[in-house]
View 1 (cartoon, rainbow, N blue to C red):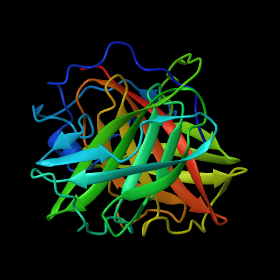
View 2: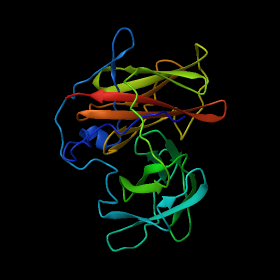
View 3: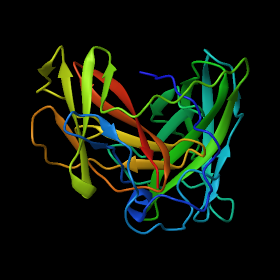
Length: 278
């Protein structure tokens, strides 16, 4: 599912970053009141000044190199290829499995109206390739999310699709989202955990299927600069229709949360907005 949103105002200062847990791949969620409405939040804990993930082509001595082009045609299925190279320019070939895959490629339009989660294939020369269809004109960001050398890394590159581009407003924070006939509710369980419950036609979905080796998958992006966090799911659940994740408070800003879960043999995507005021 894609949800109409708009790049949230002036880009956040790069010096203001996610809390340390976010940089480790944790997610953040909105507080909800007794009526389930999302409240505006206040960031808690110290603010760290390391660079947030996904804002650069280079980090930790690694670099993302687009093998062909970063300009694609909208609504066309095209080949996107890239390599990860080390500080000497040598192509990295050794990657560890993370959530069932050796490479996760997240592609979003910069106004957050489109979201794709892909798993490229690696050739013998180390090049990663995947078919990619950008649904509309605009500027996009692709995040290569992987683990190598015992550490997790996220490198980002801009993609362009020619044509008329009109950003849309970011939806207001809400504790519920609908996708493909499913109703998804967001819950906050103190400072360290958030969860989602899935219903269909008002009935709890008790037979959620594994996706990427877990009950669900969550990516959090900050509007404005698209600082990135890939969140690890928790193994436990209070109910059969619940998907739980680690949580931490980020720096001030507006965030878009993309939850993915599998049911009836298909992966569904639900999107939520969160705002942190200070």
